[in-house]
Structure formats: C-alpha cells, structure tokens
Figure 1 (cartoon, helix red, strand yellow):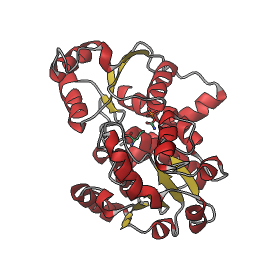
Figure 2: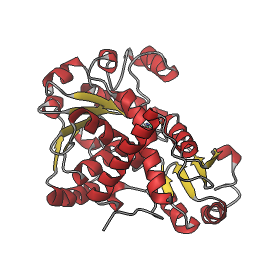
Figure 3: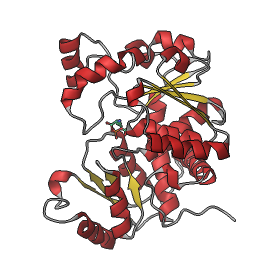
Length: 330
Ligand code: CP
Ligand code: NVA
C-alpha cells in the first residue's frame, strides 16, 4: 500500500517510520525540481495556514511562507506580541479557535508539550518549527543536502560537534537512527543527549542498522566522518549568563581546518544557521570584546571554504517544508 501522511501532525521524527521519512525526502526532491524548472504546483489552493512564532526566525518562517504560497495557500503570521495566546487565552482555547479557521498550524517556541497540545486541541495538522527539544523540519533539509552530496545517506557518518543535547543535535540523532546512518555526538559529557532519548534511538538503530557513538574527543569525532555538523553554543531561550561557561566547555569543539583535515577527504560541513563564524553580528562582536574569540562554533575559513554546504541546506528548508505541508494537507 502507498504511503499517506494525510491529516498527520509533524512534531518529532520519532513518530515517523524510515519509509515515511524517505517518502517526504522524495517529495522534496520533486518539489525542488518543479521550483527550479518553474513548474507551477499550487496543489493546495484554497487552504489556509497560520504560523505561530514565539522565538525569532529567518529560514523557518520564510520557508513556510514561500512554500505555502507556492502551494497556493493563504498564509497568516502571528508573533507573540500580536496574539492572545498564553496571556488572555489558554493554549487549548487558542488551538480550538485556530483549528476552526486554518487547515494547518506551524509552531515555533519553547516546550515540546505546547506543540503536542496544539495538535491535540486544534484537530488539524500541526508542524513543529522548533522547540527546546526538537527541530524536525530542519532534519529533512539536512538529509536532503547529504543526499545531494553522497546520493545515499545510509552508512554515512555524521558528527555533531558542540552542545550535543540541544534541539538540533537531538533531532540529528533521531533521524540518523531512523535512516541507518552513523551518528556521533562529540562534546563534553555533560552536554551529551539525555539518557532516555539515547535509549529510544539505540532501539531504533537496532532495527535500521544505524550506529550511535558518543565521544568527548574532537579527533575521534572527526575520524571517518562524512558530515561535520555544528550549531550555536547557546540556543534561543537559554540565559545569556551561560555564555562564559559554554565558551569554556565548547571551544575545543569548534569546527575548524584541523578538524576538517582529520575527517574523510570528501567530507562536507553543515550548519542549521544562524552561525557565529565572524564578528559581523551584534553578539559575535560582544563575544569578541569580552572573550577575544573571532569566531565560535565554526571558523570563518571553514564556513567560507569549499566543503561548506550550509546555504544549500538553508534553501532545502523550503523544499522540505513544502513536502511536509503537501503530504499532511493533501
Ligand atoms: N535553521 C533555522 O531554523 O533558522 P531560523 O532560526 O532562521 O528559522
Ligand atoms: N539550537 C538553535 C537552533 C536554531 C535554528 C536554537 O534553538 O537556538
């Protein structure tokens, strides 16, 4: 029987089978081809979606907006300051109202339970645009980018360097386990993923042939590595006071030329973005003034170098988010 995700929410990749994830990737490849060739694809004309953002965003918001319009849908954007949610109206009531007006809801915010409750009370598909725990739409873009480089993601070693228990690292461990890849979390032990999530992923890996590794040695993480991946050292919602501690803990895990040289010859670099690779941002400059660091999680030469694929990856957010909305709303 063919795969149908119609009516489903997209909250974490733990809820999806490897076949369903591959189906979404295949759809994204098709949508990317259509976009490139200028083939119209307003398959969801007449539908309406709403985007709720309680944290800031460039890529995710733009991806949902552009993908929604390309599919022919009406798109409404709500930021925390312009809705009643949480302040004058409960989450459940807000979800019930939105479910009466919209065919689908995107949510970016803090607790994973919020996105789960939105799905529970709205009665329409809800898409997780990032929570403190997971960033599942990012994963489809990441794996699509890996495929574009290596044709098949299976058996490839992806190492995440840095804060290996943040939303992006958690989600990478899940998607690698689901798709039979080698995932390595490389960072200080206190920032490795939570034990219960590791246990869930180990159980999945047993079925798919994936391998999970954990190391606090950057050279070990880089060994045999096909994809070097990193993310910001302090995620949205974490207190600024943690910068000093994170810098101290994570500076040995910066993705730089030395790490790249220790990886496979044809390895690529990925970053979900935004990235601190120079002093051209407010925070980047402040960190330089206080700690003397020109860059943080990735050196500028790697970010600008020939192995870097982060802008292909960013473009792929749009194609993959389109696939998710189409599959769940059609
Ligand atoms: N990668 C990502 O989610 O980017 P934004 O925060 O800009 O949406
Ligand atoms: N871990 C980062 C990802 C940003 C896309 C954060 O949550 O801020």
